[in-house]
Length: 339
Image (cartoon, rainbow, N blue to C red; front, side, top):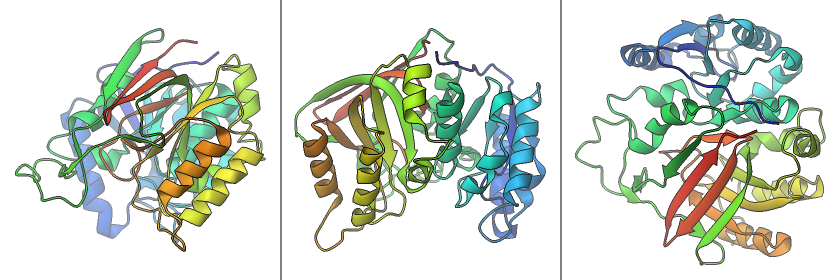
């Protein structure tokens, strides 16, 4: 049984730096993001870690875990969100009190996706792979990114539809409104399939940034089989994965590791977000990786979707039942918040 939090108007956002904090060079950027959210009607509570920065993390793992636990237990905080991602969130997992996690939203991506996946696998509480606070500081927010509010406000038992973006940040010419939006929208969005054909698939969403979630395979934080039997009723899994920095050989090794660990057992399909990584190795491209995976698993594989490090991105909910469809390069994700 999956438990879904709900975001209500005037919610309190608890900001804690579970990975990187704001150093002096980025303090103004972070403060701008906080002020923007207050202008939009949210109340914001800042943890002590947000202005800390020490060698690739905001603070030691115990300190980050303790602050996260405090925000989770604070009844006034409705959504826990990081300033942005980072590198070493994994250090704090052992300090999280999973037995006392409340049904409140936790949202973010990149390094934060490791925390999100661990929470949902361990507790059955839905978590949101979506923008971090720093991604919401623009004067205007594009339609795809802005859907985070509607997704998190969907009541248990309800459903929410998101459409693929029309344009994404890429190598095209800047748009006339680039100064109004945080992210440029200058390259045509096309969702692709390995088969080259239209695809429709259904299942429970699980995923995140493969760079980091691969490191909980075989640990108490990465028990996918337990999640499937205990919380998902044996329904098939749709994996959504995105690559930040891995070259194609490392991406391939990571996917094979997931397969050996049984993470792709009872899987109905795999989604890959757009990536600025995927550096080819000896002529081995990302498309080759996707093709190899589709052939050996005999599953549909979709790629260049709207999530991850190349914005904009949808908000995908770990644990939600989803219907994903790609027709002529356009995509739809419908998420159902049922148990």
